[in-house]
Image (cartoon, rainbow, N blue to C red):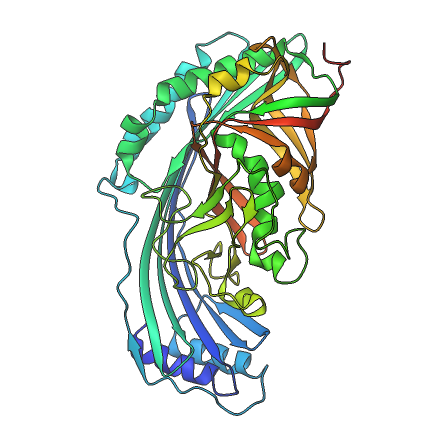
Length: 468
């Protein structure tokens, strides 16, 4: 997208005032989206965008700027303006550009954007029809499909040899929202599988008909759900999207953007127990064609499988280049950004609690009384304290080792430290769930995940009485 000769000039101007690292990030994005309301096409969008971000580091200082003008004059001017932030003698002169080979974790054959628009619209209409047919009380169904192809080019230098990387990201997500209305009010159910894969994933690898039907059934079920009891209870959390609790309450506090500044409850936890001994956890950006995977991160560092917790002991953080300087740790492929308008920082990719040895059904059978959380809605967490508040969008009462009636208004309240230590059973049914995570470097696609887990005791908020 820009020539190597121009990149050399920009890097040398950027480093002329004493910077010890410079990085050029060029991006070209082609998104495509289809939105349907009750089976009717509401919008089709195919905008395009491109731009360039430039960052210069000097010790523990960083300066960043961006532009959508990729002309030599514009890029050299940006480099000159940013370099004015420093006033030291030149440390680095970049002499050549090399292009290291990178292992490919994303390989797509049947690109979604090559599929005719009519085919994709008919696919969404079929999903809407299945959901609407579940029950007359389903008054509204929204379906959509969004695919984004992002081509990136990165040049970075911290010595006479600049490294040059090119990368292509392609992510697609389909979603269905079912809204049901009854005497008790309105209830909503959502499902949104996604992948860095092709059209075959959405037509063959996932059971989209089952997903459509279950969205309708869950919305109807919640119309008659009673209010959730409140108190301290045993809670079993389902696999897959249940991992969002770990993502928010424990994942963010393990990012170097928080730990390097002492702003995380886990800042000084390397080598120390932070979870039950049955808990191990990873952030893995290398899982083939997964929603949160990539070949390289936003700094040009190859993605890795990073161990965070081993048998309850904290063994690692997610580390970007800049915050790694404060921690004296090497970057490990976890620097991410929404677009060229954002400076990269450490972020999660596919973050999950590893599979254990327990049979998920046996975990339920061994729980005489408690709450079963099948899915989460919104929530909030403070990384500096670990305190969280999460609402369950689908929850049930467990009685005598069986999942019984559904309840609504279920909220889990606690801290990341507490929830990790309260895990006493870990299932063997690891699954991942797709979402988007917003933080300092914008919104990025992430997978959350876990097997079925059980918390011995945690505070449950609800409007119902005591669980009996």
